[in-house]
Length: 325
Ligand SMILES: O=C(O)C[C@@](O)(CF)CCOP(=O)(O)OP(=O)(O)O
Image (cartoon, rainbow, N blue to C red; front, side, top):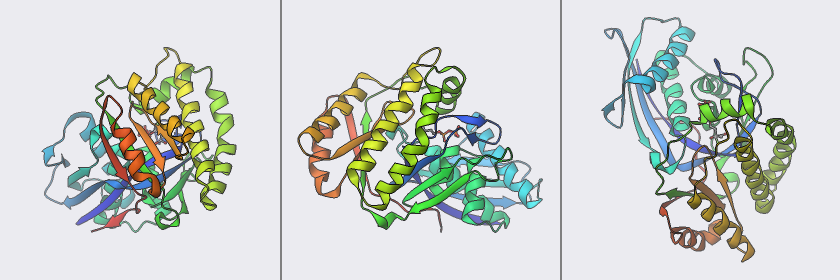
């Protein structure tokens, strides 16, 4: 039983930053993202009676260790849902997500895996059920089920049955662009999972972060509905800065930013001062993603490429949700 699915990565404009339950990945706050066309994962899941364990290859390379264990544990969820606990699969993923781009390739990866795995084993899932399943692989991945803008509603039930993403606006609602600015950074990364945990457990600023989310979400959805770029950009940039402020208030304190990260941030703010609307957002890494409008693409790309320490700039439009090939 075999199926292939393609899913795109997404960029959070209102960040998921903390878990209230680590085992089934329930968040402390709701989040909202834009699915991108430029970065995606294509995954084929082939359940075969003769297999005695799962096999996972990524970009034609065999995967073992933690990454394999996360995929196999996720397939256990699918096996259990289908009542086929002893049916193992050959999983082949191809990532069109330059890992260095600082995009969580786990977002497109787990969304494609969930969609292909569920279809291959014969589960007929609604988008909501697929998003709820995907969430248990990687939280942010649950938003990639949809194209365009999607909101992951945190839910409140302990079993997570009300924690999944819902569509806010389709990809063709509004042509907002995203430039992924890739830095020549090699740094020991605090993973998003570890970073969230330390922040939730120790940050003096964490309650302020949580208190600010409901208004951010309500306001940014108004901005998206009205295609108000300044409103959406200002809220996204402020939300990102508030998320990163929580890491500085953690113990031990940490930051994902490098000197080049701040140079890019300042260049974006300088563009705004010169009348080019552009806003930045940053996830659990040093790379910066810049929101801009199509008419300014040349200026924005040129400005970003000329920043010392920037090794590449990858441009994206809004992308589609999960598709089956
Ligand atoms: O994407 C966002 O909302 C913000 C972040 O990217 C960080 F800035 C979090 C991504 O966390 P993820 O990798 O999904 O964690 P998992 O549930 O532990 O797998």
